[in-house]
Length: 424
Image (tube, rainbow, N blue to C red; front, side, top):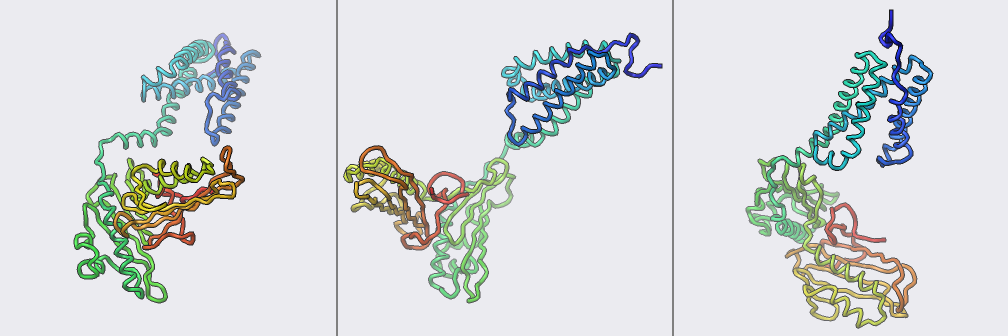
């Protein structure tokens, strides 16, 4: 009676069919051609060492005519077909891309696997070599589908026809007005603080907001005002306003929010917008350009003050209209600036201010820019020193000071609202 592995002529799979696996294992370990993510690199190394050990064991077993050579050959053959199955899966997803860019590697690999299978079957019963082929190929498809499912779902969501959400920018000026009215209410009622509801600022209250906005359904959005808890003196010191695209809407919709700070943020929620917080900041262009020109002029390291002034004004451009000295207007904002020079004439520091020309019209928040250079600087030669600056902000109707909190980075450059406006 013979076992399942035994053949009438006791032939064993040839040793050379293990060589391609050994070469692939060595390549993955030393050539680093896969360049895996550092998180997964140890796992790739372990898999490469395991494959190398398996193939070496198969070669030794075949050379010494051990019957274990059949078991090792079945295992290696199954792993070969796992690779074939994974390649076929990705070819089905994008045949042209995979074959054009990777065909030079895939086609020879398929031929080598086919040749190894043809020679391995001479030393194995049909059930074993066929089982390794079907099992390896099938496992590759199952694993590839499971691992690719989240990515495929995201791609399907992004390519599926969708309805663009309502633009939240239409509420921007209304949010500015709402913050302005809330602060005016707190000024008129210092003992009460901010209002408890929108109605206190509507026609039946201070008359600062229109009736349509007070109802909470405005310009295609549902607006909800949340007053903060009263403090020990019965005063409300904070509030939030949240506006969401009115129902019904799909997975993609828009929102906008603000609070007593006057910072207005909007988001496109859903699979396409991904909820990234973006600023509604009318001052972003004005203050961003002012910061860039202050830094650029300081880096020129001129000791000639008129020359540096000329460079600075040219940097700002025609949209900045000078009204007197180092101050002027840009859009709905007024601006001012100054430079600090050391004894050699080099610029060691600078200041800038941006304020709404009319509080609540085009903007609420006022900004103070303070910058300096760390390290030696002289009025001649290349600029030295490391620049640093901070931008302070206040929602009150007054100039910002260095005692105020830092502004958000998104208020001076087009980035997500996740950091403070400073370089240390």
